[in-house]
Amino acid sequence: MTIVETPTGALLQESCIPVLETARLVLRVPQIEDAGAIAEHANNRKIAEMTANLPHPYRPADGRAFIEHLAATTEGAHFAVFLKHEAGLAFAGMCGFGRRPGESAPELGYWFGEPFWGRGLATEAARAVIDYAFSETDTLRMLGAARVVNPASRRVLEKCGFQWCGAGLTRVKAIGASVPVDRFELDKGTWASLRAWGSTALPLRRTLAH
Ligand SMILES: CC(C)(COP(=O)(O)OP(=O)(O)OC[C@H]1O[C@@H](n2cnc3c(N)ncnc32)[C@H](O)[C@@H]1OP(=O)(O)O)[C@@H](O)C(=O)NCCC(=O)NCCS
Image 1 (spheres, rainbow, N blue to C red):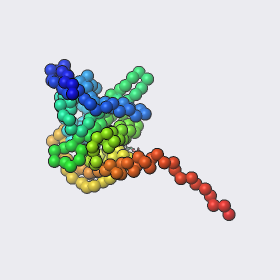
Image 2: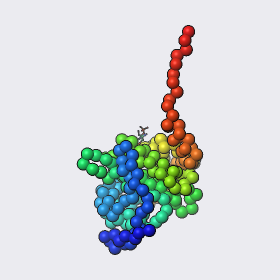
Image 3: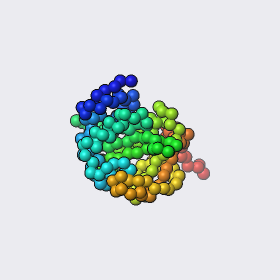
Image 4: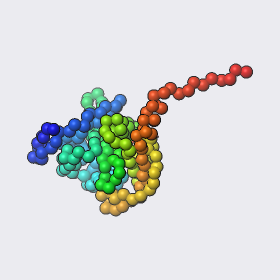
């Protein structure tokens, strides 16, 4: 394992988490130089109020602290998500998974900058991260949670095969309160089945001859 020093002097482990690529996205472990772009998009109350741990306001120093924290932990995998375009890559959001204290399985989490909403990008990123978790780590089950007032996030989970498994409360740092959430889960067997189903062609349709 290689130890690297960040511009702030923190000593970090170099990541062994791979770069993931989809049709429109590149996902990689965030680097210190991403802190500005992360803060630019995360500094949005609409995002902070839907996520558990984002502070509001969100400053570049929060982005740097977050990246250093990720690099110092071996729990889960968290990816900065970049949208491919002619001129290169544009930071679009974050997507990853990690185990909360006391939980039996890692939880999938994501947020995207507001200009990137409504284009299927969160679903595309979440599917890549889920594929990685189930195919390249020892993950057997993943959890998800969405505020009851967040149908977009609920829909992302559903489009990734998650099933509702209960309701509860989650603390949201940005509002300093606990809020009702729906909880979801996806096990590795269901994921494998959905992946296999997706690769089969639709059945042929014939009309009955009279
Ligand atoms: C939730 C979030 C990640 C979704 O990102 P996105 O890239 O727009 O998501 P996608 O386009 O992949 O999918 C969104 C789905 O929700 C649907 N949707 C969006 N707003 C909706 C609403 N108000 N009611 C019902 N469905 C809604 C979309 O139509 C789409 O479903 P479809 O493909 O079946 O049409 C993004 O809005 C976000 O970052 N929000 C703030 C942070 C957050 O909520 N994070 C999740 C914490 S649990």
